[in-house]
Amino acid sequence: MPLVTSKEILKEALANHYAVGAFNANNMEQIQGIVEAAAEEHAPVILQVSQGAIRYAGLEFAAGMVKIAASLVDVPVVLHLDHGTDFLQNVRCMRAGFTSLMFDGHDLPLEENIAITSRVVEIAHAVGVPVEAELGKVLQVGVSMDEVLAAMTDPDEAAEFIAKSGADSLAVALGSIHAMESRNASLDIERAKAIHAAIPEVPLVLHGSSGVKHESVVDAIQHGIAKINVATYLNQAFCEALGEGIEKMPKNTDPRKYLSLSRDAVKERVREKIRLFGSSGVISAGGGFVSPKRSFRSAELGGSEA
Ligand code: G3H
Ligand code: ZN
Image 1 (cartoon, rainbow, N blue to C red):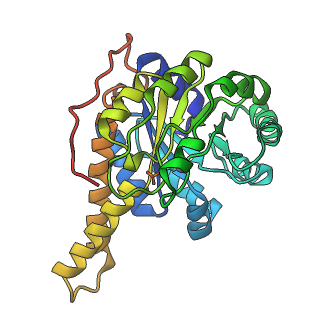
Image 2: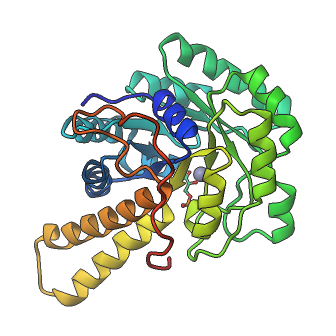
Image 3: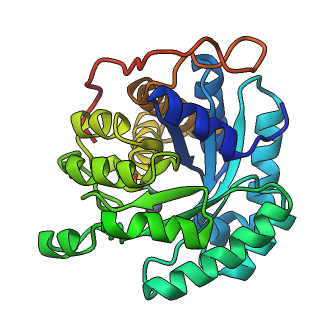
């Protein structure tokens, strides 16, 4: 089906206490693995294009591949800009057909973050495209625990930030760190509860989920987290499968034999996350949302350690 926006699928997720997986992809095999898993799981899915992916594949190429992948399946697929750097990049993404945007102003003073977010929101809403903003800072691996604690989202700022910026969803810092290679971070669930209470209608976004304990992820979904970003955990699987393939078939000269192993590995990890997030089975065979209201159905915790 054609791409959909993140607005409707995140609203559904928030109302029904599950989260939509937002998976980062850089190449055709990752996109195929992600979309195939979502289709088999009857789950909505967000394909997101990071700054690194834009540098690697180019905006138009990434957008084109996601649109084609979406057209081949009967589940809702969103094309999202991850960690948008500025106003003009968001404009370029709209032109390229993105159906969900992000302006990440976490490094800016609050008023400047609000000012740029609201400019992006104004033009995006004119054509029905929703915008994610970031309040607080989800830092990169290598920082100290004190830095993580100091960067967490202040629940008292959330309502004013949303009222002034008009953002549709909000990335919040609850203790996760981008690019962790093992799953041992816990989230500040009391903070999630306070933010959710302040802006109950706004889907919250968890970044840096690869390093977060599954128990914490499941708890956070009960308190407003409706979009969960996953990158490192998929990249690890892609590279491990590639390495194993090369080791097993050192003389092979057909790259497809290696890359199909990577594609399958990504697909299985996406399936695992979709089940954990509770979004498996929420889409009917016709591509609409299953009704009536579903109960949260997070899969049993577990899966392989990252
Ligand atoms: O925006 C993307 C993410 O927040 C992914 O983080 O690589 O730690 O899973 P991760
Ligand atoms: Zn992120």
